[in-house]
Image (cartoon, rainbow, N blue to C red; front, side):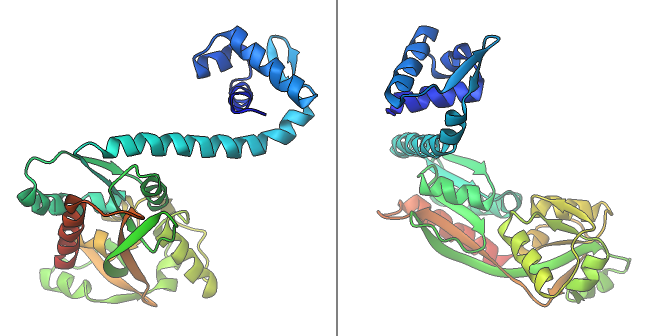
Length: 300
């Protein structure tokens, strides 16, 4: 199959019709029909049967489609990379940050950065750690800020800081001195999980690490609320939905004076990394932003 055959085949599988495929690819319906016929002639078997103005994939098409999807995905990556390389030529710093660190640490880091580059254009996207890794690999960003360690052949990591998992909950004390003391206390992981805590989804690196720790210690994790970001977990804890297990960096950004913060035992380290594209020299603005972010996190 030629590349144009693959594109048409995928478009028909997605849309279910010649007209739909034509709209997806911005070509005429006769062009789609002709390309499909040429592909079937080359393959020696039919890919679709027509039923009530819709195309139904044959058994051969269904067997072929998983491999075609892989190729389409790779092609889309090439297109994204080509577009990102063009965008990288522009004088703009492209930042990709996990949502929780974009709430407080990012604005503070930008204030420091702006002292060095008061007029440099900056674009910011919030994504989850895995998505940021893929985007940096495709050069869709200049700097990524993520949780946990990352291993990708097209990505280089720069350590930022190491914190730990903490449990945040409404503090029962009303005395300010008692609340300060509570922030230095600890809590057993099993105790928090039994209480039905709010925790991070297992698709998140820290969520996966927490799930693995619970599995090793035979701690049930079925009850409670699961969320996608540490900041949402903290907000829910502030609103009285129960204790939440989050990272210490997010906990440090709270503006609540009634939130109790306790270190989870056994202590679980949480790292922050900066990601940059592998190969080549990072721009000075990118390097300076990483240093600004590192200084803010260290100060917090």
